[in-house]
Length: 117
Image 1 (cartoon, rainbow, N blue to C red):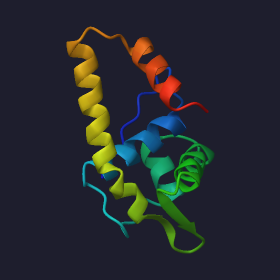
Image 2: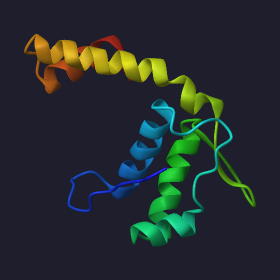
Image 3: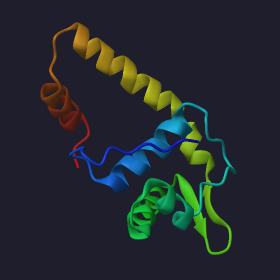
Image 4: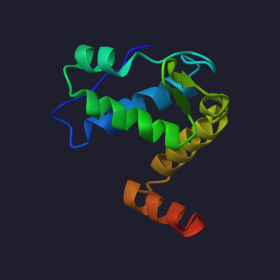
């Protein structure tokens, strides 16, 4: 598993870390029961603050994608990999939108109409 971040991106680093884990799970790189790197180890490897990694892990836990246990670390849940079909559907939707000339903001607005908060 390789987590990549872009410090110059406008996206928060903790969001980039979480997105990388989500992506690996959806592509089958991560499987249920796989352990993520320890927060301190990942923070050192990425040269970021440990609290940044912990926030990413907490967000993933809140989404049900990982289980956080003291002494066990972060473990990928079944829910993290069952979303692969949804990821494929989203990719197909984006490809259709691009082909039809629908811009990202319009697509997001259409999704929000169908999935209100």
